[in-house]
Length: 169
Image 1: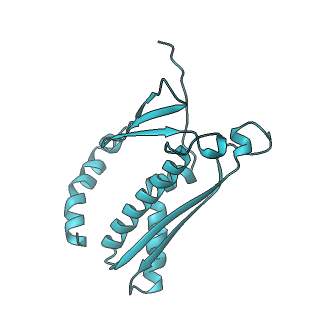
Image 2 (image 1 turned 180 degrees about the vertical axis):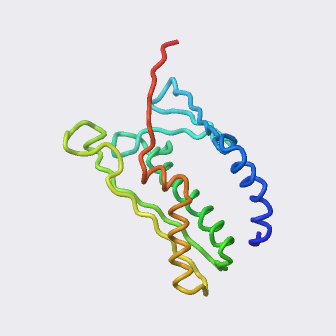
């Protein structure tokens, strides 16, 4: 896809959202069902069922997906798509690209072993290795706009309002 095709695709959406701001608000949903035999949750991905379980550092077998890995995978996916879209909009040819995310977890927090240990990632690093002939100034803009428009990056960067409800059937 080139910049003209991308703009043509997005122009009617942008116009619609300018005219009717509430049309731009979409509720994304995820659904999972607790596994009745194991400490696991079956998550519908839209394409298949993903079985998430305990990370080996918390006693899991490693056979199930780790939700921490899935979070990093979502960041990589979102950042990669955003980088490609921004590069297209800026007319930067990316001949090749690798997106990596890594995060540091202290499982003492999750297991309740140390009250001073955080539950969750204490640091996440996102990196892009690209092959391109674009000048550094354009690459700086590419990174800045990718950070700005990547939904997962911004969700992690600016804490959203969170709530949790437990309903008894």
